[in-house]
Amino acid sequence: MALGLAGGKLSTAISVALRRYVEMEEGRQEGYDEIIVKVGQGAGRKQRFSGVLLGEWGRTQGSRMEIFKVYRSRQGKYVLHVDRSPDWTDDSGADDWLEGLFSRGAWRSYLGLTDSSWGFVQGEATLEVVGTIEELRGRIPDELYDLIAELGRRPAVEDLDI
Image 1 (tube, rainbow, N blue to C red):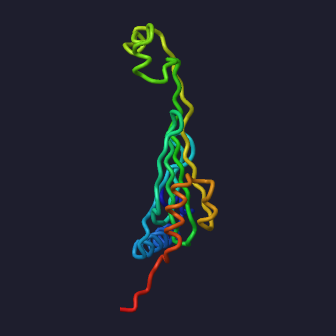
Image 2: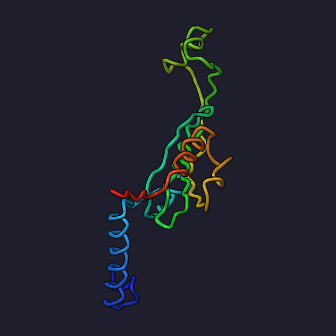
């Protein structure tokens, strides 16, 4: 199987695996981790890179949750991963569960004694690479941008004369 993926040549398979190993190990020694994220809808696909997590921010909008993660890659670029949960809806008509519980007949729905319907829009995850911190403005919540921008003002490596 591995030989089939490498065009039938063992030397090609070994050199590709060795190159990948060396790149990842050099990154680890520099303080970077192997990052694997899911992108797309549903099961989607996975993407992998070498980076360090700079910040994470979560929020809800309606019935959907969004998680923003910003990484710095080994090449100095900024990687934005946004994971959006499914967007659920139902026909209960009650915005507040307690209010709905005491409204006329709503308690029957909560006990499963009446018909109800529900649905959702599939969640999705995206990955975007930008060259500068300023390019993140408008793509992430302002609060996260402020935190990330502060980190960007600090040098990645500070040389101490001690």
